Image (cartoon, rainbow, N blue to C red; front, top):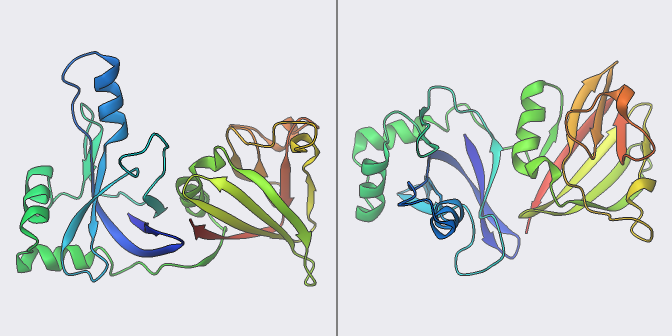
Length: 242
């Protein structure tokens, strides 16, 4: 797993992710539910890759839900999963050890090598074409399935590609390009008549096209005039962190 680590003001770096940890509720109260929901954290590299740090999923000290971590590669092959706390981590770095190493700001050589190995087969692509089911899954990860997103701009480029800018996606904006027999309809999200914000989004391949639709679990046949949608033979995207 790899993620964009937001530094704010559009600045960021990319890190391997070594764990995601949540607390167990102390009781059944709403306050405990909020505490465990709002304060999960990831274990990631510092920017220099010299130590591990704890990075809360959301910015702390605000009522707003502002992600600090944007997952760009959701691969968790071999990870350990705890269904009770809904925590998950790489096998060599359980919570107690990860927390200890974060606090000490040091890494034993063997663990450092294991952490570095997580980056061996990964290269961050600023512009990424969606060609496989894995590509779709990673776009769903980083976009949060476009929850709360809205179409800010749609325009044709000189190379016959359709350019789409999605704003208000949690923690970022996302640029998309569609090309090859492109069709689209955004009238259902016309801000002058309707709510422009998406609740969910679906990305799927069908009949030689790739689709992006403002609904979950839909097929091409189910798309109606009540949907905001795009389709093309090809699609690529770029994440712009806030």
